Length: 552
Image (cartoon, rainbow, N blue to C red):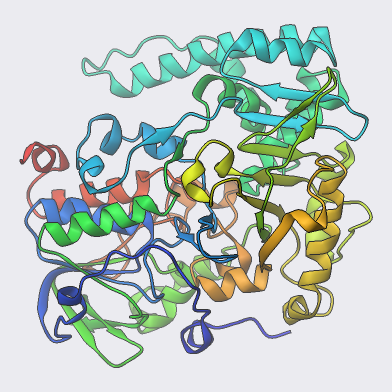
């Protein structure tokens, strides 16, 4: 069982028929020996956002992406059939919509084709095999009505949780933004500390009495691929609360419209975005990172900074090990992947229709199919042993944005994405995924049909299957099939990510910065790492992000 190296990624990375690109002929004609203020290695949404702020500040920026198109995990492609726009990974942009870049309109990304959000309501539908169902709406009364059908006590508990969570998040936000230094008192602060320190499984089971609410809550809490049996995952007990309060907005036209808009912004502000330029080496002169070298031999020099979104497992091999220091290298060696993802994409002539306990059916942008409750206690074990227990199926996340956004598919048709976590390291080795992925996909699809029986084989007119190994091949930053770039457990979160002591976007080699999902908060479409990295760099350049934002 030989793990894939970055050299193998560069040599044999998958080329997909991607639908969205930002590049102009002028950008692709740039000379490799041209000097820049900042060189950015990788074009995920965080590195693009960082580059956009630096370009707005007036610095000459070049972004180098190894794949044929930009976006990383924020990418939309016509992989099933022409006209069907599939989000390869992310779909909901809740975090990014709340980022100051959008809330304060800092980059005016609407002018570049991004920011028309669609509010999906209902937010989430959770059907069960016995015909019961829970539906989360933006209206709390309507949500509690569906919960009360399975447990009146849980409906009352949920209503109380929403009120407490609103008060807690409002107080913590005020404390973080306090200008006077006198922060407001956070209600039940000690209780919240204990809640978050518990495992999601423990807290969820303590809060809810019904098997339905426990399973639905944990399934939605697990969408970030963190097992709810792990400590410090108590926040997962508030997954449905979050959905009810904040919703799950999706960008019109596809998740990839964000990457496209950022690419356009960078080019409009004098920067370059080059694709099919995988970075393989850091150029270090006088113990300072001064540029990068690509697989084709081209080099790009940076007079001020190099920004990387390359996974830390690959980055450390791009410069002499002595420059990183022993502690950093040993910390990076211990960095662990999250539970890998398998992603099934289908072009269909109908949206999934879920039978309702009150009669009729419902079609939603998002739904989850829950495993049995005890499955959450077995996830780590199954991941370690590499066993596929398809007769005891995992939970499924179902995403069909065409239900709320008709631009995603031809008239009357739909896109359906089914995702779950399965081991990367099979007992037979990760390469065994090439032999079994279609069989596994069929098993998962057949399980899903128990909950959406209308999606019969004749309704599926195209498919694209991504095994954990395919995901790794497609994007080196999704190391070992980790769509969020690595486990976000207590050993790898906050200041511990990617290596303890190096969670503030700087790297041990002067002139080198790291952004993207390998730095806090890790994973999801928030833009927080990208914006924070820009703030750190701008401060070291002698200005501030706030000053740059004010520029017209």
